[in-house]
Amino acid sequence: MERTFCMIKPEGVQRGLIGAILNRLENKGYRIVALKMLKMTREMAAKHYAEHQGKPFYEELINHITSGPVVAMVLEGKDVITGLRKLMGATNPIEAEPGTIRGDYATEIGENVIHGADSASSASREIDIYFTQEEIGE
Ligand code: IDP
Ligand code: MG
Image (cartoon, rainbow, N blue to C red):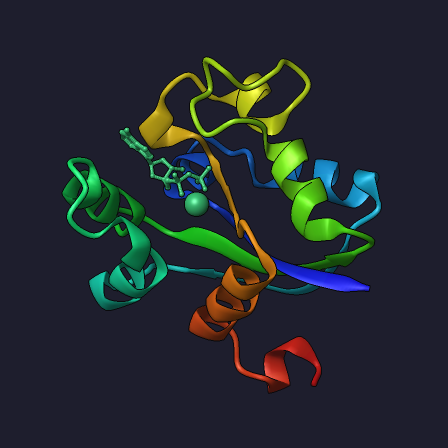
């Protein structure tokens, strides 16, 4: 079984989409191993989005992701890293297919409601930013 890191972004929480998104993840067959709501600090955000530092949208990204509470979780399932990315849809909601989470719930690239780790190394790196070993049952 594979594990990944997933997050409902501030706009998803603010728009009341927590239940709808969790429902889709569980319906797919993924198990929620750990779950918490928190407001990210700028330090956490910089760590999380380190790969984007220096890009034109970086400041906006950090300001936005720290603007309100997010829901962070660890998901477990068969091929969950790739599977979650497919379920999320493309980064830009205009390119995300209907039926995907971003395709169904978003119109703005900066407010695309959900984050999912893009590789096994990102998944373990990101899980460590948000959860202790005890919180994920290890
Ligand atoms: P991902 O979330 O699909 O992995 P990344 O390229 O890792 O996409 O970008 C991280 C987040 O930064 C995106 O989800 C999106 O919210 C935001 N972002 C990416 N590119 C742009 C852009 O060109 N303008 C504004 N925001 C962007
Ligand atoms: Mg990414």
